Image (cartoon, rainbow, N blue to C red; front, side, top):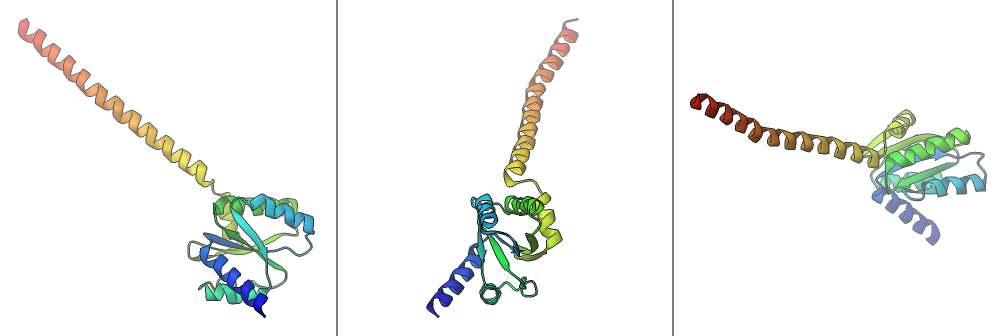
Amino acid sequence: MATKDARLADLQKNFEESAAVLLTEYRGLTVAELRELRDGIREHATYAVAKNTLTKIAANNAGITAFDDELTGPSALAFVHGDAVTVAKSLRDFAKAHPLLVVKSGYFDGKPLSAAEVGKLADLESREVLLAKAAGVMQASLIGAAQLFNALPAKAARGFGALQEKQDA
């Protein structure tokens, strides 16, 4: 009983502290394939196999009811502590190579996600790519502003020079 309570507390803590949670069914995958999956997402997530009843209780205790109807069959959860897009991409790519892995649903930013929405999340660019693009846009804007500010004094100087020549003539 003590280990069950400890496992429940651990699951609840994972639900509460995760940026996102992705629910999968892993029926038919080998231990080696599950290890490969865990290793593939380790940097951004923890992949945990748990009993459905414990998962439901832990999720409900954390205020999450998104998985209540999805917890059937052998279920495992990816508790995301890093980039949710990267984890969704990794799960999608792993599922392409190993069709026995099925992404069933998810929970991200306080909202439940269907399997299709998790797929859309996987289609997004990673946080690093989006930040790099934003930095490029901001840099281009700053360069444009600097060129504008440099052009104004030069244009004014040319204008004053033309006025000077006109008065001298």
